[in-house]
Amino acid sequence: MSAPTANFSSIPILDYSLLSEPSSRETFINELRHALINVGFLYLKNHPVPQATVNKLTEYAPKLFDLPQEVKDKARMQNSEHFLGYSRLGTELTKGQVDLREQWDFGTKHKCRWQKGDPDYYRLWGECQWPDEALIPGFRETLETYLEEVKQLSYQFSSLVAEAFGLGPKGLDHFYETKELPIQHRGKLVKYPVVTSGSDQGVGPHYDGGFLTFLLQASPHKGLQVQNLSGEWIDAPPIPGTFVINIGKALEFVTRGLARATSHRVLSPKGDAPRFSVPFFRGISPQIRLADEVLDFPPEILKLRSQRGTVAATDSINFSEFDREPSGKVSLIGRVKSHPETAEIHYPELFKELFPNGYSGKGSAY
Ligand SMILES: O=C(O)CCC(=O)C(=O)O
Ligand SMILES: [Fe+2]
Image 1 (cartoon, rainbow, N blue to C red):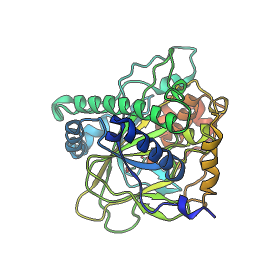
Image 2: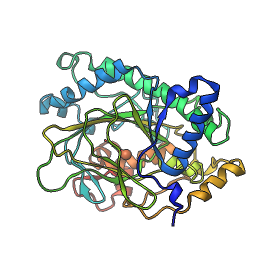
Image 3: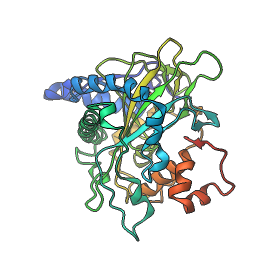
């Protein structure tokens, strides 16, 4: 049984502006520590990403998916050894069931550095596939600006996470420092269509794999839900001007479970308009092996983990831990499983290893 005080029935809202004064800064760090350990999800308001950029991107989201199907298909993910591009509705499964969402994967600006002889996972980072500028003028610039601004926030935020855990502000920096290969962070635009009958699985219960996710809910629909310590689903409705931030399995692993990766899902919208969202997945150095990097914490911080108590079984399927492989390889394996039709073209050997009997036509997102 988990301690009742550690459970949650709503997602905490943290106010970034508290950081500007030393006295309120401590309040922020304390609230952050609580959210990381007990909830694994939080809203961040008054954050430094300009609202004008967020508003512009929000306006583009429906326009991107309203492009003619052949325009979207021209940029299909199968073209890309970086798994960047457009995926039609219904091409991914979670927990064996189809996710009802259409997606376009992008990343922060990156030039692929892979050369013959380098590990395959170096090919995972590279150029995006953009729709023609003339068809959606200004979209590319807006998204590039947005991803750069969220990236900056994600660096500041990681430093705050390190501080909240008593590691000092640079305590997580070595996960991001890589001279050889600059990190690419991924972002995607997602459209969840309205469903009137049948399954309402926008995306089924899952954990995110990486360190931290910064999610923009880009339309006013409820649908995102988060599983609390006793297994109940708690709504995380859109709150204008905020990001939803959550912890992935990699950060949970290196913090020895201090930071919680929390199971979440999205229910399809019921009303008369689709739901849009823009998750940003903060990357880490592709060469790092998580098992070599498990962190040490002050005893008073570790005590907070034991006070949390045990977490009830969640609805998420088990996350396969490949902590002894370089993190880039772990990401590549994740992409191959989610997008086998792309993997079969660009990574035929790894594809055969992971799908020895072929696949049924759909990837398994989680
Ligand atoms: O669309 C959302 O609100 C969440 C999406 C999500 O959890 C994911 O893509 O990992
Ligand atoms: Fe997620």
